[in-house]
Length: 150
Image 1 (tube, one colour):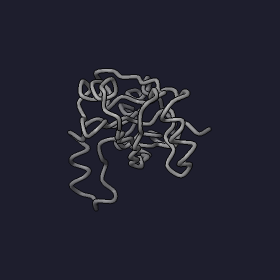
Image 2 (cartoon, helix red, strand yellow):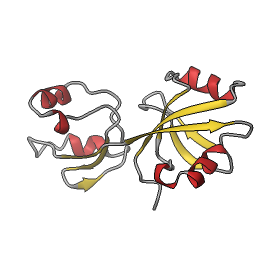
Image 3 (cartoon, one colour):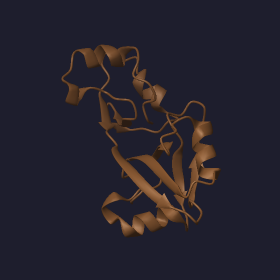
């Protein structure tokens, strides 16, 4: 589960914390009260009636900037829901992203990473336009979580 907006109790928490301990947009919730969670059951864990406090274990993504040169297909499958923070990569196939990964092993992107922008366009329609458009260069801003490696 990736945090889409920092609101409500998260704002209260952030106001009492040093900046390195604040919860940020795009942080990924890994555990709730010491238990690994999925998007399906997160509400059950957070709204545990027997607990006054909730302990979240978060993962902060690493920003990656990929500069890809056409011709060639992008080679990624994306998933998106209206409730999602940003589209995420579900699969990397033969194409420009796989080539990037092979040429830049310390900067790879993997399944579950978030696509934040393409050619500085962040809105979903703009991202799609850029990917489908004629630009010879695609600059992808990706948030890497490192969970598609295993």
